[in-house]
Image 1 (cartoon, one colour):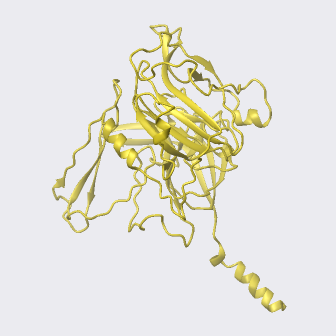
Image 2 (cartoon, helix red, strand yellow):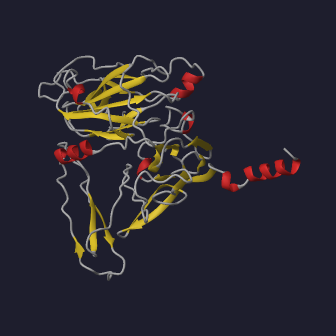
Image 3 (cartoon, rainbow, N blue to C red):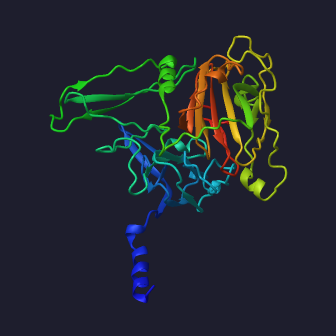
Length: 432
């Protein structure tokens, strides 16, 4: 090749037209914020003084670098968690130090200190949630991360004319077609609760208004389902399917290396300061998780002994009628910092079984570091002989968060192709 042609070729390769991925930098400052609503002023922890926090934008294959500096008295982490930050649903392939709860993959960010989260978005697109992962800081420290398709790659659905981010607390991507008569429509959101316990029954409302109509047009109302509409919820979730196309194939494992049954229970632990001498705790397979003082990933990586044991049970210690009225007499749980080890690239099935112990309820569940396929669900006790025959192994929905129905079960499958220490946990009770 002659020199002038070589020079032209190199210049062409360096042109922005050939750049397919970028490195995107964001700075998060954890600060206090005052907010006044209904004549009442509250002070709370925020990111960059915003509530909700700033939106992160990236494309598939981009590298995202978020520098988090903690200026408040609370320790933080970001799950994507602050004081740690979690990017909720990002797979974090080979960057597990940049995700997860405090003391699982990282220690919390101390006051006056910073932590740099560095991860590459691989094989994902859509809108996800980032939030703090220390106690209840997530209530005010959260925001969206918008992942656009690669340049030149269309959306896996009709391209929307406009996009709007609504923070609900979990991630759902909704495609709305404005094909109703011109008017102003009510949007209403209420909590879902099918457990016999008290809760904050507040509704959030907004309106969707067509352009060109007067601002004080009468609002067209909508009917909200009952708060405990378990059958409606189950029917909707049962109807969800993956695309399972050539571009977006559904790679669900057909053979299983690890088959786990996790019974979700509410139990008791001794409490010297409690009136009844006991406190309510949550447990999986009768194990209540004890938070370590050294992160699990750090202890595993540096071979630090005494932080955790790898004997988490693959099934409940005893078989009983999980969703029936005949529950075990002993409601006390065992405490421990236990993990279950998986071989790299092994295929895993977990059946999440709800129980009727003390307070049966719907359990939101999230698995860090992975997406998973929801291959089956039902009410009552899981039947290991009959229920797998009804599993959807063709086009099951791919999720990172789900809800285990009250007195029911859900079966998920995933491949353990993301090394590190990962946490599966439930949201209603902070012991998980």
